[in-house]
Each structure stands twice: as structure tokens, then as C-alpha cells.
Image (cartoon, rainbow over all chains, first blue to last red; front, side, top):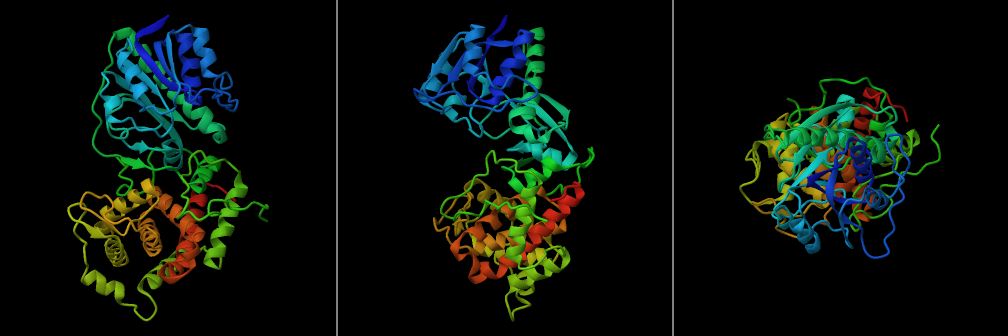
Length: 245
Length: 215
């Protein structure tokens, strides 16, 4: 069983593989897919094995096995004209977004008549931007994820759900393992709610928060190697980070 | 004892070819040892004393024989305490004002400027000579290293006043750039680099202690 009004806009990545692995057993697989495969001859990425989900089977193989209608495009640019056209023509109302990391959706894609459901690896509005899973580990010793509909700014759209998660046992595989794992878990919860109610329930984000930038490898190493106990109240400054609430 | 691992993030001229730090590999605790070695070579001694390093930064900012320059600038600033945006500005003027206010204990006035310039650097890995009222570059010259050094100093003074991962993160990237660029050891940037590198390493050491991490 699939969700007929929900699509998936994806590249092959650990996040996409986690999403497919998590949604399939709960019959929450999107009913239509737009898959960005790259230029002809592009081979699926070789991604590391992780303990949370099958991260070694290429997404295209899983999509084929699931039998979901899929439009495959020979680009990795989520803002390319053919992507905008494919999204506009797709027989769904909402796309789960699992595009290239760091890509920002441009106005013409956002205006293509669909909504884009994104799961961000941080508690919004406090942790916006990049590598927020590492920032929250340093500040609070824990992680979080937020589901939202994308808008023209970074991580500011209406919220569908926010959920805290504990720090992983092994912090050295966060990028390809724990980060996509917790995103997939929250996505499944949101889609299960949608299946039950037939609608997505959103709330505007409260004011405040901070946009973080890609964490420097020195800080990233400290976050991975940290043996500090979780702290519910972070201790970093609230003015520049604008993060205490 | 430090394992034989080189700190690789300043190994090319980052002014010509910026590093975007995406999906950097995990190299274990030895990486932090290599980082500390790199910064301590820049600082020319063990950088464990944060308070003394603040004084070094202030002295380097003021310049030899001009110890009251920062205080004078605080009394007669060019831009601050006005907050951005709203006017075009010369980057060096805004940064000097920020340092004058920070060393006078007036961090609040510097805060919006540090946020703006820190964000500009994080996004583009560049500091342009002038910005317009819209916050966009108004001059394409970005090769003067002095503003990078002064911004690093200001962010570290800011971090010392009240710890901020946002400030420390940008400072780490700025010191990478300064130490990688051929001109980073000359002029005002060169005068600031030892104190800035030392202050940055001290901040990282403090964070490592809080997080119970050893190199």
C-alpha cells in the first residue's frame, strides 16, 4: 500500500535509503517518485553500512522492487527546469523532499503547485541551518529532528512535528547512519498521522532561533568524542546563538 | 605523545580555493592533537592561558606604541553603536569599531555587526572591502587579509566574553584561511595571527575539557 497523494523527490543518498527502509514496513511509501539519477552512466553511490537500516542497496533498486511509478531524470540539480516540470506534472499534492544536501529550493520549484515536506536534523526553531545534529550534541548532549514544509528561507516553514532523540551510542557514523535514521523515524510518524487524519496539521514556527553554518571539523571531532552527560539546558550564549528559550 | 597526523585544513591557499568543510572525515582523537600542534606552532608557544591571550589580542589590535587607540576609537567610533543594516559601510571600519567596543566591555553594540560579518564570511568564505545597505558586497576586493584577522580577533573576544559555538566556528575557519594564505604572516594580519591562533586553541581546549575529550 502507498500514499497516493504523497510523492518523493529524491537523489540516491543515505537519507533516501533510510526513508525507503523505514516507510516500507509501515505501508507509508509515497505513491509517486521523481528520482534524480544524474548524467547518463552515473552509478549509485557506495555508502557505508550502518546499524540502523540497509544503506548498501541502491535506492533505484528499492524503488524498482516497490513498483512505485517513478520519473527518473538525468540531473542532480533539484532546481533544473526538467525537475520543476516533473514536479508540476506529478499526480500528488505533497513531495517528501530528499534532495542533494545543502541545496536550496528556488522560487520556480516552490511555485510548482506542490508542498515539500522536509525533515531537518535539529529541533526548530532553535537549531536552523547546517550540521545542527552536531551543534545540539555539543550544547545539550542530545539530538532532535523537525518536520516542516519548505519555504523560500532556510528551515523557517510551517512545522509538522518536532521530536527529541537521544545521542547515538556510536557518534562516528552520524552523517550516514543516525542522522538519516532519526529523520526517517520522524517522517514515518508524520506520514502515519497523515494517513490517519487525511491531512497535514501545521503550526507556524515561534520567533527566535539561530541559523548555524557547517561545523568546522575540530568542533565536529569534539562532538563525536564527547563523553559529557546530556544537559537539558545548554550553556552556550543565547545572544549570538539566539538559541535559549 | 602526538600521533603522526598532519592538520590538513590549511594545506592550500584558502583565499584562492576555499574549503567548504562538508562531510569531513572523522580521524579520531589524533586529529585534535594535530590541530593543537598546528595552532601552537602559529602561536609560537602553548596556548593555555586565555586571559593573557585576550590582552595579547588587544595589544595586537592596538598596535605597538598606540595602546590607547582602541579606547580612542570607542570614544569616537566611525559606525557603531548604529546597528546594521541601513547604510553602506567599509568592512575595516566596522571591524575596528567592533574591537573597540568589545575591549571596552560593550559587546552588545558589536553583536549585530559580528553576526552580519560572520554570516557573510561563512556563506561566501570571503570578506569584501565594502558592503551595501542590503548587506551585499559593494566592492569585489576580498584579498586584504587584515579584515579576516580582525574579525577572528573580534569573534574570539566575543567568545571569551560569553561562549558561542557560532563565533568559535567562524574563528576556526578564519584562522585556517589566515595560516594558509602566503600574506597571512605579514602586516596587521601577521601581527594578530599568533594571539588569535593562541586564543582560538585555548577556547577549543576549554571546550574539550567541558566535553571530557582528550587529544
